Structures are given as C-alpha cells and as structure tokens.
Image (tube, rainbow, N blue to C red; front, side):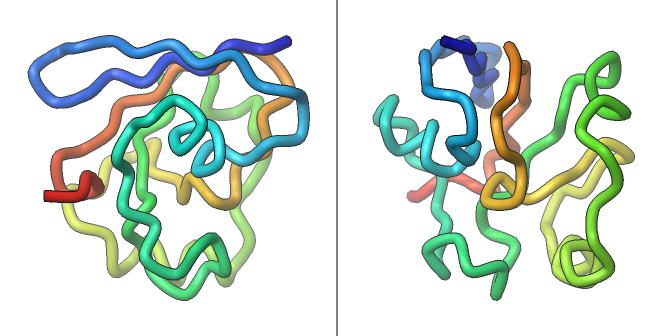
Length: 104
C-alpha cells in the first residue's frame, strides 16, 4: 500500500496508507486530515489544493485544462500546485497542505 505524507502548516507530518487509485482528498479524509474539499471532489472548487513535493511533481502527469482553471482560483498557489481530488495515488507521495486548504 502506498503512503501519502501530508505536511501540515507548522511542519507537522501525517502519514496515511491507502489503496492505489484513491484520491489525495480521500486519503486525507481517511487520515482525519481536515482538507476542506467543499465540492466533494467534483472539481468545482479549489479547496482541496495541495503542493506536491517537487521531486514527485512530474511523475503525476499534466493537470487537465479544467484542473488548471480551478487552480487559478486557489489561495496560496505554488509551482507544484494540484487539486487533491484529481491526484490518484499510485506510489508513495509527499504533499504540503497550505493553511487555506484546511477547515477552520
């Protein structure tokens, strides 16, 4: 099973083991990590926005034009920004969760 490592604001690390094919948003929910995900993963918002580790970013493939449009709405964007609902876990993955993506 792949492990997703979430780096939360303040540097806290949380690891979640998931089945291959699970989305990062689902992995966060399984690990009780409060990523917002307002639209429930239908790619109608940017509240599950995460920053992918630079060394792994290219391994995920290109985001679709629709995801790129949603990322334009993300708060705290970075060059490695992706929507957690659009990343399917295939191998170990490390992500940083911006504070704006967490439920308050």
